[in-house]
Length: 361
Image (cartoon, rainbow, N blue to C red):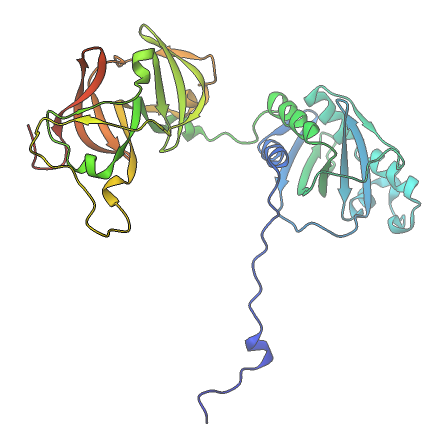
């Protein structure tokens, strides 16, 4: 038998790809996160569960509502949940006139509407079919609301939320986050801590210069934010909170990146130390490639709850002196210890000790 046998159609057919939910625009993604992380508690419980179902298909019904001056749509893939209501028992839901179906939906969902209005402190105004938009923000997202009423009734209804305008999505997200409590709070989270780094600044340094650093060398950063009363609380390699310093107190200004665009220069303590130069005919001057070096004041472990509270305008006690000695770090790895020096009015960062090598002062 030949080794190059022909595969059957079933074998040659490509394996089905896993379903990937559509990428939501920021307004829809934020609203989705807000809904599934909150619950309304009044005369029962309301729970939103995100389900990454594919979009498309004709909904069984669309209920338009106006909330806070914005238009939203709720699409139902099926109306089977209506049959659970005693007033509709035995009714052929699929053959009800559209206006009757919408009236039935409003009747069945009235307890849900009452609970949501009370929790969000808003008024939900149902729209007629003629008033309901057909042009929605895409893509939408599907979720299930699990509603338990005090009288024992319970529904788990799948629906798709449609938003007519991005501003409406942002408005509803703010209302949900401000008014509804979190669904679940992990008691262990109070002991969780996040590693942060307090930075005095940073600079771009060529690899050739960095590789040749020795104790006594002085880096000349184009700017040194700590000198101007500004620090950074780094939460990672590229995200940080900008801090304004006054005395021994720091105040959160805003969120920023950790990209320091200023190019570097240096004063060497060894004039005989040749600088790195590319070889003849080199296509890439690796020594000239630049990396960002940070000037680290201290590392801090902050409780997660405290880190969450660091909104712009929030002040807290500062433990480090903004102009004290620093550690030079690259991608979080300590390279050298350094101190600040004054070169005729120009601030310099002088290497005092290299870390992790045999080259010590």
